[in-house]
Image (cartoon, rainbow, N blue to C red):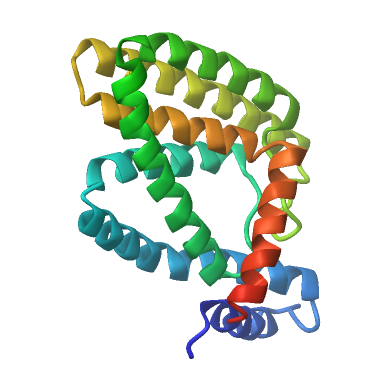
Length: 214
C-alpha cells in the first residue's frame, strides 16, 4: 500500500543527497521529509474531509473547525502524529466530534456565544504567551527573532478571530458554525500545552498499534 510517509522520506533523501553538501545529513532529511509529507498529504486530507463532512451533513461546521485549527496552527505550531495516516484519522475524528458538539453548543448556549468567545480568547492568549509557538523536532524554531515574530502573529490571529466571532454573532451567522470554530480553538489551544502533547502522543501510539501503515 502506498505510504505518503515513506514516499516523503524517500523523496527527501533523494533531494538532500542531490544538494551540494547533502550527503548523510539526517537532520536535514527529517525536516525536508516533514515538509513534503505535509504538502503531499494536505490536498488529499482536504478532499477526504470534505467527502466525510458531506456524507454526515456537517460541511459548514467541519470547515469552520478546520479553518480555525489550521489557521491558528500556522503561527502557533503544535504536535503532530508520527505518520500521515494517523494524523488524517485523528483529524477526521476530531473535526467530526467538534462539528457535532458545535451544533449542540449552539442549541444550548447560542445567545452566550460572545461571552464564551471572550473567555476562550483570554485563555488562549495566556496559553500563547507561555507556549506559542510550540515546536517539534521535525520543525524546530531556533531563531529567537522568528520565535518572537510567530508569537506576535499568534496574538494578532487570536484578536482577529475574536473580531470575526463577534461580528458573526451580531450579523446572525449560523450559531453552529460559530460554536464549532470556538470549540476548535479550544482544542488547538490545549494542543500547545504539555498536556496536549501528551494526549496526542498517547492517541498516536494507540493508532500506531491499530493502523501500522508506516
